[in-house]
Length: 130
Figure 1 (cartoon, rainbow, N blue to C red):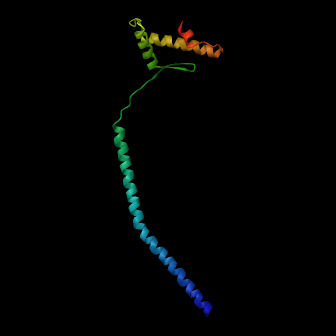
Figure 2: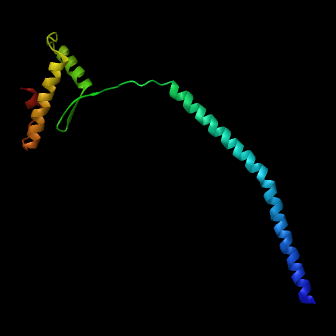
Figure 3: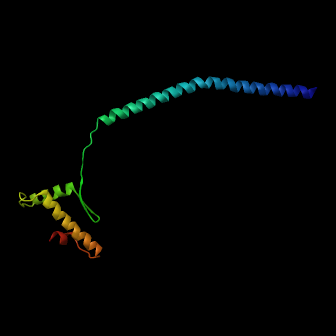
């Protein structure tokens, strides 16, 4: 008899534990739904902010590649810088076109690239002296 009573007692304890766990789970569901709703609102606000912030910016071309000679890249800004350097040295730039200046820069880079391929050490000053 004593054995039967302890089985019943254990069954009651296990049943009470299961019911208490079920009751706790029922209490946590509304909080989870509220948390999920807040997360959805935050995500919607983030998407709205991204859409608004992307409309405020316009694409601006900062620089472009004018030519590539071997491993050397000639940018549009290199052409403008060379033209400004010539003006600051007092050279007449009326007869110089951007196309002609690009040709000269490409020629200089071609000599430097060929010197690297031929394993000849040539300084930039020697290339620019030609």
